[in-house]
Image 1 (spheres, rainbow, N blue to C red):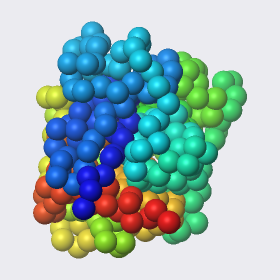
Image 2 (cartoon, rainbow, N blue to C red):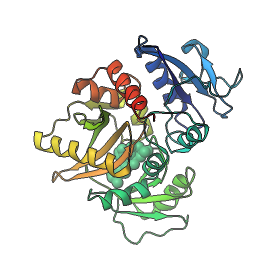
Image 3 (cartoon, protein in one colour):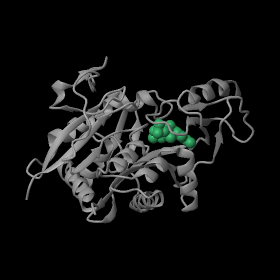
Length: 333
Ligand SMILES: Nc1ncnc2c1ncn2[C@@H]1O[C@H](COP(=O)(O)OP(=O)(O)O)[C@@H](O)[C@H]1O
Ligand SMILES: [Mg+2]
């Protein structure tokens, strides 16, 4: 069997550029080279074509020492010999269907969700409608397109967030009327469509979903515990190592755990996802399971939640990569 060329696409224009590069570098190191030949292909922050990188040393670094695709170099079109693309892009132009549409247009095969599922999952207001139609419980919400919105339907505190945000950017917990205008303006920095949501009080639970041999499978659920003085799972809590802990498996009853797994698969199918997704829930003090969001390309370093959830479920990081690539290859007509 010949070795299959896989393009690991990373970087790009989104705010999540660095985490995307870290995910791609992790996969580049761990991928089974007896089966696959990985090409590390970076998109710079201004988005000019693809540059092939040979490892960490070919990246620049940001102020925190995290990898960034260099702005200058030999940017090229995609090599037509690549058999499968692994789009390790998070957020805008990557996880929202834009890159997927571009790959479809050029005739490249890729793993993971296609255009419609990626775009649906990215817009929290649209995804919420799909979840409701499928009988999943969601936080009550309202779409706002006007900065002068006046609250009539929500008691304090509630959440304001950009419809297509990520990494908690632009997400604000509003505790009183005097905070509304500033919070709305903050959310509008990221999107011209903003979502208001009732605050759910409870624990935050994440569950991985993966297509294994053509079947939808879910991982053991994990719980995000915020240890620092953070009101919610905000940007700093997410990316400052000591601020959060991921408990796998989540310390919940077997019954709740199974219910979360079933709902995660239901959400995956409702959105029309392919390949993989991480589904995030709240569990209230009354044991109600409420879906928060679905991520079609979750963080993918060996220390990220999605690979850790699968590791606890019995799939090593390298095996997880192989399952995804082989699943992507199996779809090629
Ligand atoms: N309705 C809500 N009730 C309680 N907490 C919320 C709510 N919406 C968001 N949060 C908090 O904000 C975090 C980020 O919001 P989320 O909708 O997951 O956006 P992102 O795509 O940026 O992760 C969540 O992990 C949670 O801690
Ligand atoms: Mg989230």
